[in-house]
Image 1: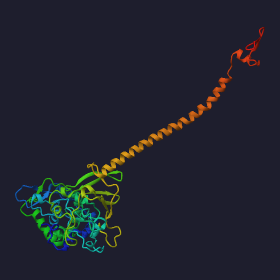
Image 2: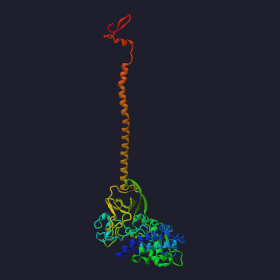
Image 3: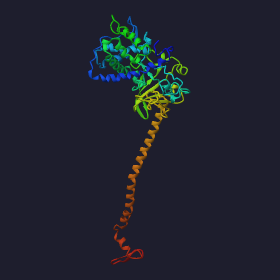
Image 4: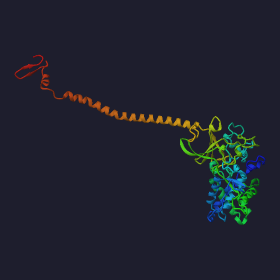
Length: 443
């Protein structure tokens, strides 16, 4: 049984995922960057799952992701791709699953289950600070245990307490992404320890971040299986189709805060490969003694320098949506002396909408709000057009009104017939005509 799963292991088993020492690898890699030796091309490949002699199984997509990462990794000593690939893969079998059958090949989606809270609210160490991984930091009484912020992610079980801090859960599940960091760190430590001339000592240095609980000896055994004398490299590794580099994680397009953005859906029930970790008690065991809760399906979003995780009510069964965010580069646990550490929790008024799931409450609400906004905008446009038309009409009407009296005066004053004009000269309304005398009403 892999270390990560074993309930018989003592409490220190939790420490092996911290990988804090691996931060040294980054500095080491930078230190040797000026004297890098090009990687030698790989000369071997794993075999199909049904091949005789296979001892361990690994996902084809995950294997290809590691190979790509290794090929792109510079190194400061003679270290071929096959050897670096074996170094990178060895602790995976120790951390997640030995892959003794095709069904138990390591899953890139693997979530840690042994980061339970001690029962003491304190930021003095990671175990006491695990209370902050529960929604609203209420580890003792939360009614929402499955909106749990899992700290150990992926086949390498990187944790935000150490080298996992700069990455989101989605990036740690994507083998081709996280393997670049793993390969660079291992190559730096291996070369610094003496490289091939140092043999097992250099390999032990490469695996130092996974050394807890006999990790170096276990990794050495898996390494020897992959590069055993007398057989082609990786001939004992069977590749399993259907295990992608993300292990079943799905890339989606979401709407949040009125904007479309990339997001990733992590649904443990869809894990590809070994899924023992997704089958135990989902709410977790007894506080301070059992397993941590298994998260309900959640969405991962990276924006504004934060990793966000969103749990929707349709997926949790709770009466509200729950969201949390962690500043990238910081521990998800609230630690003493680290003011930026810890998850910030809230229940959003406007939850995330996965555009591939239009019936989600948030999606329905967003569509309704969009329709309402469209109607309001149309009404505003219509009102503005009417106002503009009225503004244009008013001066024309005023000009017309002003012109009307002038026209009337003009009509009144225009020349008339001679009898009309002469009639006004006699009070009785008639007029004098030569030789006729008075002509008109009184004539």
